Image 1 (cartoon, rainbow, N blue to C red):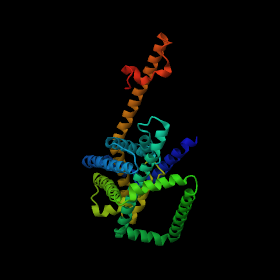
Image 2: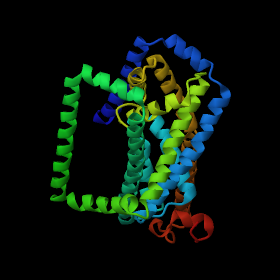
Image 3: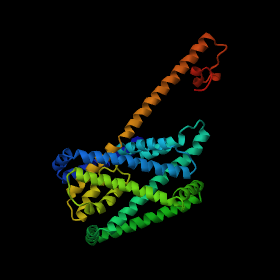
Image 4: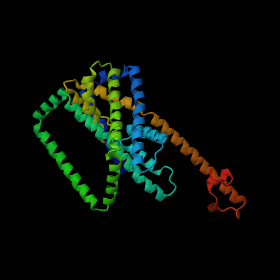
Length: 359
């Protein structure tokens, strides 16, 4: 039952947040605008998803090489598309990344010891690669707020109106940071200390060294630029003529809300953030929510090549299962006709169809 509890709660959170927004906003206008999206801008947004995945896969491949494991270029692109699609359709927004790490760590392994030795670096590579992207997005979001007089003014007014809640939030974040530091110190002195030390070593090699961090930063900033470009395409697809300079500062803080793994692909959280950020800048909440919903649909559409990867993998797995079943039947037939000369332990199924040579 616990297996389904967390996904169920995330689904409930997604539906609850979207339901509250639908109750407060004009859903009829939203549906009408979504039905009249400009096809040209929609196609452009979906096409931007291609360099977005390619850049992300390049960053992952570079990170994997820095932690000492190989990752072929076609495999990186293929697995990143699959992970992106799974993140869009499964609760939490990180299930695809977990699958990506697991598949990379277990690819081509024939023994449990070998699989274990590569699974750790594969997991750390994905964590570091994701952290690189989130740090870049956080930096862009902070810069966007700092450079936007409208947002700064809205935040200042909100702070004066709810100063007590603001101080509670700051104290809560400070206590959380202290607890994290205490936990990290305790882990370094426990059995987990060795694992934490390996993670820090890989983090330093793959993200913090002088020869690596410029490439990490540049690739992550380019990925963030593709997110922003898709959002601007969503605005034009909706027919909004608002100046780009007015929209740009609002997008990175909105995208940060999607990093919180509480709902499915950020749905609900992203729209709720839009309903707060747009009024802070003196713009209608309805517009922000419409843009957020359109952005979510465009990102989902651009991830659909990952569905093709999933279907091809499923088909390949069924085909391989059929071959193994046929090989087992062949072994049984040989035993039936020559039981004394055929021992199942001495015949490898992968040698049957190739005259004794491995296929």
